[in-house]
Length: 489
Image (cartoon, rainbow, N blue to C red):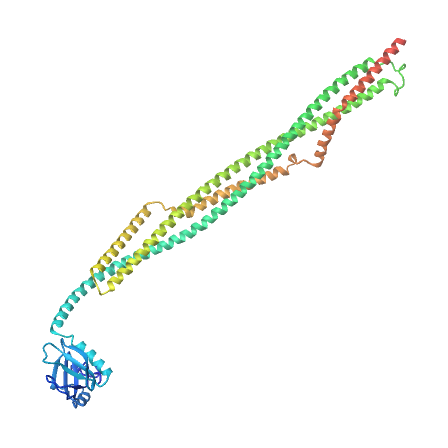
């Protein structure tokens, strides 16, 4: 047995299978077996004498006058066990009188003939009619499917373009998201810098407040010192006037006056000169104290102006910080909303891609049923809703202001505001340094010593009461001495 070479044989002599089999006589019981050359051709089993095999193989066509022809359409082919023929094949049909029994020489040949005989038995008139009807129906369905497929392909192309556009928009949103993250970090850095500057201004305000308190205390001390000096000057003036009156009353002719060193007027003149010197010193100290008081008042006014300036700067920084915080919170809210919208869009995009894949699989599939058609309709409906919603969102976005773009470019205004605050800050620092370097606001070592001297002079003046008491005692004694002298005369 050999397979027919379909490429070598002529188209008119192509066969499905050929070979030599054992055959038992048909229609009667007999134990005699004979070898015959069999050919399966187009659902017919033809058999010849065994010598026909050589002629068939050499001429490559079969004889049109076989010994017998067996139609295989509708036949039942099955293996059968026969005595001395273990690889028998039984062919039966309701129209046959008896069964046709053949036998192969090996199990492999038996399997090949069984398979080909069973396949050839499927070709019947009814099957041919059904096949033609099915072919016509399938061709009509194929044309309809091809038309629908072309429509779906066109629609898929449009939807694919829309999906590409949506993907580009997604990439643009991701890029904007990165830009917003960078801007958010910049805002946080700016807020930290502003807070540091605010803390520095607060420390400088505290230092200025302490300086103002010190200046106020020094002003109080100088005021009390000036009042004390004024009081001492008035007392010394009164004493000077009294001494001058006493000197005028005690003047005598030079011939009768005692020696210059021993006379009481000489002591009074000396005391008077000392008092005048002390009054001069006190006047100088008073002028110096008044000068220091004026300087301290000017310094106090400058410190007050600086405190007001720093307060205004602190208020401006606080307002800028509040505005930046509000802008940061607004940008974060916009970013969260945008991320939420993007996640929703990605979810819808994945659903659309899954629907597209399912629709493409349904179009490529040859098996169509009602369930698959309903699923395809549902996929098409979902895709239509998705793209209609995308179109509505695009129209709304075209009509409404874009919050993301405003968030991207808002840092320019914030940068200008920060630069302005820093410029005012530098100018204020420069003016404050100039004021600090001014001689009217610097307490030198000599002035500090003068202040200490003023304090010491105030202490000495507080002790001048003993000096005045001593001076009065001298005057009284001098008056008593004059009275005794007049009595003796």
